[in-house]
Length: 117
Image (tube, rainbow, N blue to C red):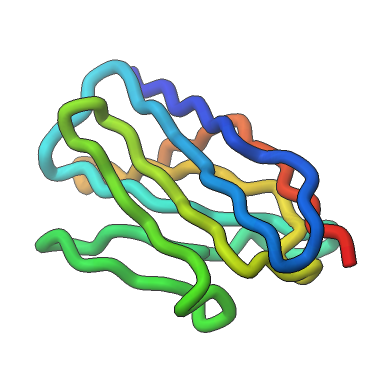
């Protein structure tokens, strides 16, 4: 059983910043990977940033240099620092936990990020 709870979304003006948090609880394994996805209105849910096998990170091209993913393993929490926000970043942001056993994705409820121009 895994629960993911996102927080930190809100309304910001273009150029502003937000910090999203995702607290994971339940049975969390060291092999689990966590990351962030987003879904804009009318679009598919797509990768924003995630940790890779071995502790590396990957980012969508559209957010490179602006967003930073971080984690606190002791708290089972992952963060997404979002700087220089653009209206195109407006979306519901979802925390993701990927479990290799069963190749299963767990999702949080999502948190709305709206960037005004």
